[in-house]
Amino acid sequence: MQRISTALALSVATLATGFFLGACNDTATNSNGTGNTQSSATPAVNSTTTTSTKGLKIGSLLPTTGDLASIGQQMVGSVPLLVETVNACGGVNGEPVTLVPVDDQTDPKAGAAGMTKLATLDKVAGVVGSFASSVSTAAISVATPNKVMLVSPGSTSPVFTEKAQKGDFKGFWARTAPPDTYQALALAQLAKKKGFKRVSTVVINNDYGVGFEKAFVQTFEKLGGTVVNKDKPVRYDPKAQTFDTEAAAAFAGKPDAVLAVLYAETGSLFLKAAYQQGLTNGVQILLTDGVKAPTFPEQVGKGSDGKYILTGAIGTVPGSDGKALEAFNKLWKDKKGGSPGEYAPQAWDAAALLILAAQAAKENTGVGIAGKIREVSAGPGTEVTDVCEGLKLLKEGKKINYQGASGNVDVDANGDVVGVYDVWTVGDDGKIKVIDKVSPK
Image 1 (cartoon, rainbow, N blue to C red):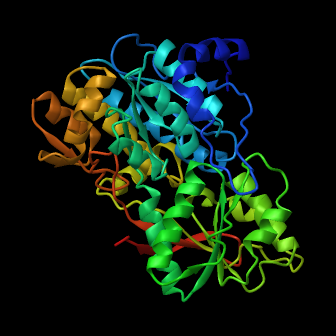
Image 2 (image 1 turned 30 degrees about the vertical axis):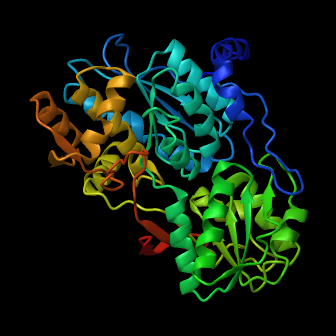
């Protein structure tokens, strides 16, 4: 994968320094002062998928390296697949669509630099990304003033809803995965259903982790549960390498279960540390979407008895139940083989919304996309599940209501959607399997 030089990334980044420096440093801290200190990084950039200099140009800003690489690599193929499909049926506004992919490295500084490149050098109208909420926080602060529509397939922090309500994003933000206020509700309901009365929490110290923690605590208490470390929340530094202290604190107080809101790379180290201290015996581990990857149980490893440490852990993840899901799965199998991974349907839908909104607007600009994205996703038009059929109707001057692979993707005024959640567990063989679905109520 090609990388732009550090010098170029820094020179580009200075164009929007005022826009994103605050966002890069906007990190929550715990009572012990462990904040997220970011390292400098440059975005990895692939060449565009077409050589056309006209027509709609979009970008992707997704993690193929870093703490969320195990999930990012599952979803990153969706966007080029969508662009390939659209170009095969005539493109948008009479021209092929061009895609510029960027690896955000699961790092806010790399994400901000990548977004700056996409907005100011590549002149994209829309971007699929990012996945990590902390990276999207940095990216949207660049996208908004540059009038680039950002549609995230996975940034689930409730903070985005709050900022959208205040008008911070000026309509240039949406997401195809529901906010963690819904997932926290679903997981709290699951914990209640399982009979857990006393739960403690440990979260990665960023927008995603802290936002989830707050939503879960509030919901679980309303359901009659007790969060044993509510007054001393455990929030770990994403750059940490050892987690013995955090593990001891998270499992203190004899909880029935521990809610662990983690990313895969650092989360595996945390769970290993907890096991090695003998803290996990008799305590249910509750996990979230940030670690649901086939490789995660192996990352955490096996115990001295030869069994997977994560055997029996349960978690939630935004599910996919859209009317277009079957066709998407078939296309993926035909083109790539196997089945799409986590958040691949959400990434497909994010790209689809950008493209359909541009056609509806009859212009290849971020302003045009932002002005039409709710109309094509939640408007009163003809329901369509096929992107090419949607483009055909729009070209004829008709209105559509896109029904996605991940769900109905009815984007509201805050850029949010409501979805369902899969309940998953880790079996004795270390494999993850979905065992139920929950809808937050």
